[in-house]
Image (cartoon, rainbow, N blue to C red; front, top):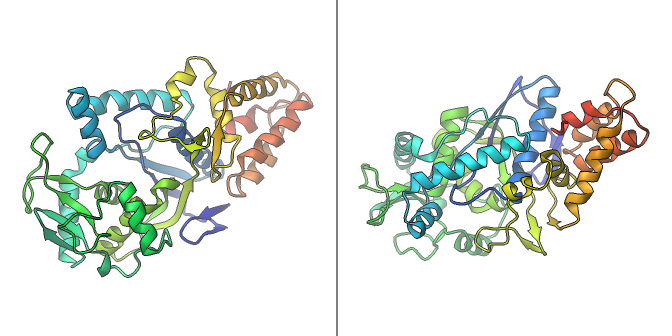
Length: 372
């Protein structure tokens, strides 16, 4: 199998032992799942299905960020407890993903379940002289880690710009360097707080994923990723703090999905230009929604338009109409193109051709997670 590897910026062979350990960054549950989420998790789902088809076992961990700036702000606006908001949105997210046919996660740990792990991890970062205390918080010292930038390959000005856009607060006066990132921070009066050796507070954004990945999967993960918007700062910071503590490579293969746009602009909660999965499920078969997503290569940026769902529904009907044969039409072709950097558009074309001949394509479709 060949897969694009973000750090090496190339399509390279992916090799793994029998059990493939995977980690994909999950949701911050303060709003419903949208098409951007679905595209990322469906890509990982198709990958898992092909790996299992090859005889592997997959352990895919998908975390839940149930304490951070965004969820606390939304809970404050709604006047609800942040964990109640998280529980409601996680339940809706899980239902949406199940409807789209995603394989169950091997583990779906929450950040709040890992506070002891996070505290222990921060202690190890401090002991390794890669972090410092300042202003009641703990910060990672990026100057202490020579490989900072190994994933994103960005220059300093680009890093600073993205850090500012993503809540990294480069102007924090407690930092030695604007690119240093918070591991532990004091909580505001109306925010949850946990006791620590550095005072009461709560974890930073990046530290939870390192702590959870190490706890659930060990020091080195086979595949880690999420949306391409997480490459910097989130995944860059994850890699730095993890490798600073363990001395081992954090991830063997980084995999990132492209952004989904609406009217030419990336879908994001901050812009409010979202297409929600639960709204689509009211009007369309789940398999058709999945087809609309995988008609695009996972690494590409693509636009959601009104024509996509009718086209996908028509494609599903054509596939369902095939009745002659054992169901294995196009199966080997689909396997081959999935092994070429998960080329789902080519897989759909192969199935289209077989279905057009009236052949039963059910097994090839099922490899893509499309069933009827």
